[in-house]
Every structure is written in C-alpha cells, then in structure tokens.
Length: 383
Image 1 (tube, one colour):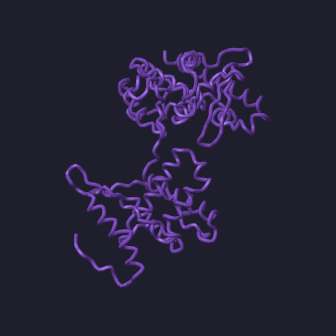
Image 2 (cartoon, one colour):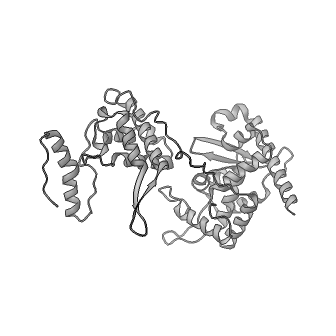
Image 3 (cartoon, helix red, strand yellow):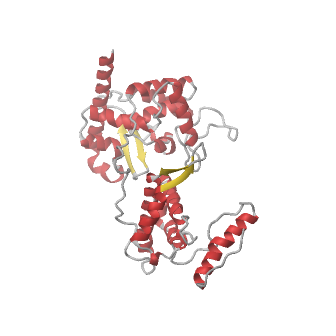
C-alpha cells in the first residue's frame, strides 16, 4: 500500500476517498471480510436509481428468477470500475450518455481469465452483458416514472441494438428431447429411486410446464380438486397465466393414463403443498422437502437430473428443460394448430376462460389426442 495524491478537484477527491480508497483500506485491514460497496448512496446516482427500482411495486411483480437476473445485471454494471477508479454505480445518471453506456457495455462484454497454463485469455459473456443492459433499461424506465423530476426522460440504455450472438457465430439450437429419450430418462430415474423426477419429466412433456413451475408452482390441490375433479390447473407464474387442462375427453376417455396413474399415487400420500418433493429423507426435516429451496434454487435438482442423464447414457446436453421443448415439438409434429398450441402452453384463464371455456377445452382435448396418435405412429415405425 502506498500514498497517492487525491488531485486538486475537491468533489472528485472526496468521492474517490469515500468510495474507493477507504473501502479498500477497510478490506485490507479486515483481510477481505468487508465488501467493496459504497459507504452511502448518493441521490441521483445509478446506485440510487437501482434502489428506486427495487423499492417500486414493479420490482415486486417480477417473478423470482428474472428478478435474480435483474439483481445480477444491475450489480454487474454498477460495480464496473471506470478509468478514474470509481464505480459506474456512483456516477450521476444526469451525466449518463449513450456513448458512456456503450463504452461500459463493451467492457462488460469481454472478461479476462487465466487458463490452465497461466496465460490470460479473453472470453465473451454476451448473454450476461445483454441481461445487464436489459436490467438497467428497465430500472431507468421505472425510475423515470417514479422520480420524473430526477431521472432524465431519455433512457441511454434503450435501443442499444444488442445482438444475441457475435457476428458470424452460428445460432445455438435449444436441445430438444425425443419421446424415446424421455422414456429412457424416466426408467433410469425410477431405477435410481427418483420417482418424483420421473413423473415431473412427464408433466413437463405433457402439460408444457417450465422446470421452475413444475417444481415450484404445481401443488397437489391443483390436481383434480373437488370442484373440478376432471381437470388439472397448470400455472405459468412467469407470465401470470394459467390453464385448466381436461383429463378426460367428451366420452370420458382418460387423456393421460400413464401420468394420471402416477399423480393419483402422489395425491394419496400428499395432503397439501407442492407435488414434487425429494424422494429421500432430509436431515433437517422428518418429512420430504421440496426439490426447490426457499430461495427458489433448483441447482441440486439439476445435478440429480444430470446424474440420471449420464446413467441412462443419454446426450450430455440434455437437462430437464428439453422435455418441455420435446412436448412442444411433438405438438408441432402432430399438426396442432396455432390456437391449440397457444391453448396448451399459456391460456389466461382468469380473463378468457369464462368466455372461451368451450373452445379452449375442445382445443386441449383435440391437441392431446393428436399428440398421442403421433406418438403411437412413431412407435410403430420404429418397430
């Protein structure tokens, strides 16, 4: 540690001392136990804008997963160190220009790391950097409405022309599971004692529900409730929509015989709460705990899914999400209409179901039958 001049610009010197040098000294003195966040948040700074966003009702309306991504994105931008040694978050937003934002984005886009030989290599983190700009843009718009006199009307994070991939880089295809891969995965999951994961995979395939919603939103009360014993309520918290799936057609034929047999067993042993829980005992609870944690974390589940994928000798790129994608692909291959796919994927029942209940139910039944016919046809061709 060495002494250095604070410059002759008094405000800049005070800011550098409070936001950079003193926190650095505290970090050194405490052997890293203190963090490097600012001592206080200055009115009108980007840090202040982020705090306005997080205190706003709009922040509370964001689903947990995107909210966490917003948190990471705001922090990535705010904690970026500028040439003068100050954080981008400490800068006054009134001084922000499109050029300044573009320059910071260019820096965030590339990260330097050391390889196994100790050489410094550059890696692009475009998805993370783009997400940060998206979070900042949303924060600015929300902040401008909440603090109209303090937040400039021109949003420098808007219309940046962000690209999803680098020029010349091929489009990354989303992995999609096949029906045979689903069957193999479920068989291996049951063999390894993960019955809940096996059934959950079939739920994602049949009812096109996202991973975080299968494990974090599907409750036992949603499946064949007393008031609707022939239906299941599928919720999509990400977009605030839901769909009541019919479990039988007009003649009373079971549309999901395999899945219903398994879920009926779950309903006999689960009184309330989430359907899918860990199949083994937990040291902190006498009863099975959900796969999803209180902080909406699914990392443990994903590790188990990867273990099952490898044990079943399936493609390494497979995870839980491709089973939902496989269900959509099966629907397209079955010649489902756009209306049938929309009804299956995200019907907003709270507003539209009272008016379109008959049409939606018909589309869901028609779509399910088409998919089962396509599945049977494919199985016959493979024999």
